[in-house]
Image (cartoon, rainbow, N blue to C red; front, side, top):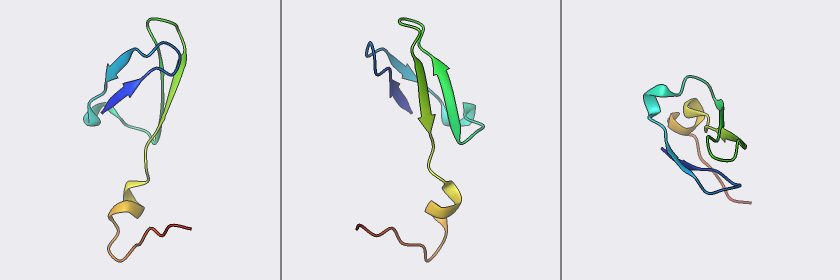
Length: 55
């Protein structure tokens, strides 16, 4: 997964196996901005018969 800092644009590459929680917060090493990464709920996304509708 590629993540960019909202403040300075620094790029970070995070391996999927490094992510243990639904919400991950990392600190940008360039500008010290806190970057919040929210992961989708994998159970809902992969559940058979579930549909995502647009409103």
